[in-house]
Length: 153
Image 1 (cartoon, rainbow, N blue to C red):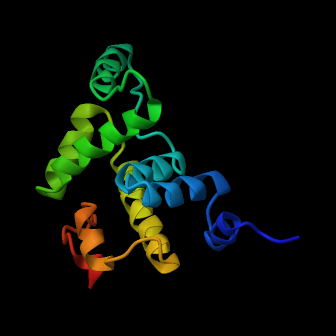
Image 2: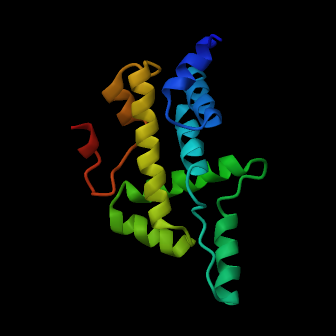
């Protein structure tokens, strides 16, 4: 049995087939930033934190609604990522404060960040992304160690 051209590339990606398709099509259709975020978000637990007290739960729900996209849970993940990343760009402490005040999991969002990077590196290795270093910088990465370019070196 032979593989289709898409199947050939999917077989080289060590991810779920559906996530692999999303990543490949995201690169082909030039919507890779969102595809990376969605694929990474689907690979980890929810970034939303649910507090134990009823009062805090109401506040958390209200905070979580700020990220809601009315038509797509996937785009809600993208809204969370974009907001988190804009705070993280400034410094880690600001990112952590943002997570606490928005009832988001710092660890989960850092996992998403790391998975985005790994997925991007896989796509570069398969030749779906040209201009490696420049493209990586365009996709707005920052490591949790505070050096935004540490993983590029």
